Image (cartoon, rainbow, N blue to C red; front, side):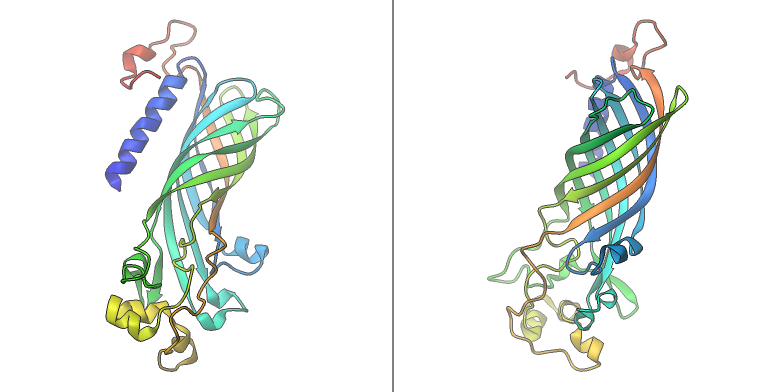
Length: 286
């Protein structure tokens, strides 16, 4: 995973550097909150926001016209959820947390142009993200994906899901210039994941003893925690009993404040003279 992200970052840097030779270039960072919507998310939007975690990232941005810009970003976000916060499913007693490391490129579309005092925009693009859901059990955090809590990896069941996946970020934002070089912004973005296991919950329960024999005692213990909630023995529930909703994919969201610094027209331009981009840019030409 580390090598994959390093390669993607190198390619992203090359793209930004190549575009920025003749375009307005900006580098910056953002800080804000992140949350998710899925099978263990709070029931109301207010509770979803109250359950939000920290998110921060860095970005590089280039204007390629009055109405369009491209932004490459790396974002670190956290999400969590617990049935304890859901009045309708407290007895199910599932919970999780996950860090999400995301890298992507989006197009920012400015219907009013980029040269206004306040410039609203919409954005859409593509990203790759890595996540790893965990749950707390007996005072320690355990990774859920290796456990196959819905039978993943057993004969007749799906394979274990991958932890690195693609998403489509879709967002709204606004930018406000502060002097000649600094830009203040705000943006909110949701990720279309095409995936339903951010929280490790999607389909059906597997019988406790079937899971115990196939994936081990820890998998059986954290897959169905209703007995733990009721202070009873584990349930001998029938395989196929509904555990989550596989028809409704998970989303994750960020809402951030951005601060950017404009480097001028061309990342390596020395101020009105001939650009030195060819001297310093060691990436392939696009």
